[in-house]
Each structure stands twice: as structure tokens, then as C-alpha cells.
Image (cartoon, rainbow, N blue to C red; front, side, top):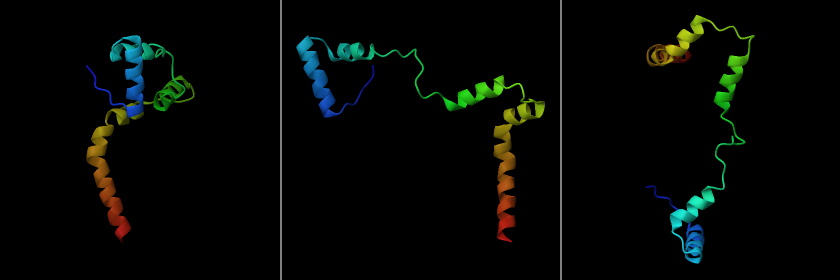
Length: 95
């Protein structure tokens, strides 16, 4: 079950179609949505996934274990070391 909020004009149009075709609203909406092919990619690709794919395919990039370690430990670095870095930077700007 899903609740969908529609503007008044759209709701009136759906109700009119439902009455004219003597079909429930959910059938009308399902029939309208069935016209869309969701298996086809949209014109707005996920840029982050596309960048990751391109980076993985680029043979000139030399991946090393440090990069993997940084990636795996990024949350720990942000939680622990980044706060110290910001504090030091703030203190040096105050002087």
C-alpha cells in the first residue's frame, strides 16, 4: 500500500478517467505507469558511478595499497585526525 498526494487538477482527471472507464484508480495509474520502460537508462547517469567505472578502466592509473587503506579507513580518519587538523589550522589562523 502506498499513499500518493496529487494536485487537485490531476486528481480530478484521474477520477474522470476512472468513472468513464469504470475502473478503479489504482488500475488507471498502473496502466499509465506501464507505458514507461524503466529498464532503459535515463538521460542523467549517476556521475559518481560513471567516474568510478572510468577510473577502474583507466590503465594509466597506478593503484596502490595506500589508496585502498585510506579509502577503507576514511571514516576513522575523519572521526579522529580531521578534527585535530582543523583545530591546528584554526589556531594558526588566529596568530
